[in-house]
Image 1 (cartoon, one colour):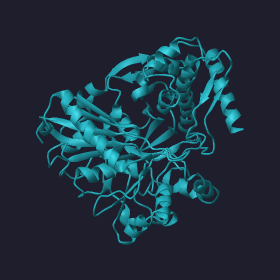
Image 2 (tube, rainbow, N blue to C red; image 1 turned 90 degrees about the horizontal axis):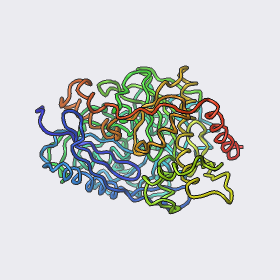
Image 3 (cartoon, helix red, strand yellow; image 1 turned 180 degrees about the vertical axis):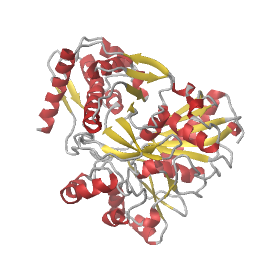
Image 4 (cartoon, rainbow, N blue to C red; image 1 turned 135 degrees about the horizontal axis):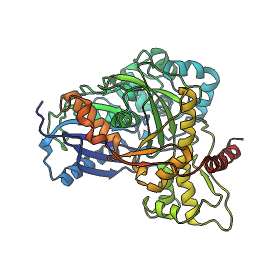
Length: 495
């Protein structure tokens, strides 16, 4: 392939879509963003409109071209990364969605998952590396099939398509020619074998999912067809890289071998530790998932998943009106010496790893007459660091070794106060790269490697350079006291 041109990376996230144009050094030449509307029809339900997901891509990509002052024809390959577990059903013939997508945060299948925990938890965990939780796709598909006659009719006719968001975007970009996913996304469905790396017939039967609805599973750095009628790029551009957002971020950070780890601060918080060619089943409440090796080949990782991180800051803005934008939170946190005894446990969608309690809801504790807006905002930021610290501790128990430094990425890492607090709370350095959008970067790198735009990881060192290291400034006594506040709040909620 010609070495001219750029790679387009599409990062379709929970609250919006980011498009990056990457040059041969992996540098970002253009960036575009479009928000994605959120739908909350009932408490605990979170939905996205599939057509609005696609519309956000159609808006974000041209903005990246405009920022780069570039022509569409310069794109030589496309990489896709996506919010995982979010579940879509559509008609394979027409491409028309059956219903709104059920988002990964949605908790409507909690009772079904509780029943599965009583009867099948061990077998499902052994087969998939996952726990029985509404987070994952299988019970969402089951719920949609039970309540939508059209979905059942399409399934009987062999016309129903299921996909996570990556599959939906591949379908739309290729004009409905390719229905495919990759192992990292497939491993988040409760339907895919951790070791067999195939759709498991026994799990399909358990959840009533027709095999004809499933996407093909192709290598993360591989052939996902070419664009056709997508409008945002010319026809014939290879779609060549696909990975779920957290595995893409792991790859983007250069964590492609056993022992390397990163933490992403996005809508949720996700800590992944690469474990190499062999899966490690967690005993500390983490997940085992499929990740990418140096060439995008399937490998394994341990993962800790926090459901609400940056979403708590969005709640301060949109739900409470305490801040005008996320950037304001840093100044407010600095304006007070501490949180004034306030602790926020942002279990708005239950608690993920290492607790896995879908029945718990959020709580704001320690309020007094002296509590101010700044205390609440600071407590919200602290909750990101506390939850990440819980994941680090669980990871140390499973891996038998402590994290010596934390690689970080995601939108919230732009907050210097939060990064310093995280370093102080962990007692280890926190390292922020120059490109904090490593989720999109990872998808782009997979596509570039698959098409020969890049041939070695050494070519990508420029894109992965460190921007700043935050070193701990607090002592062990301070850390112990801070953690005690958080753990007391958790005991109040969990009993």
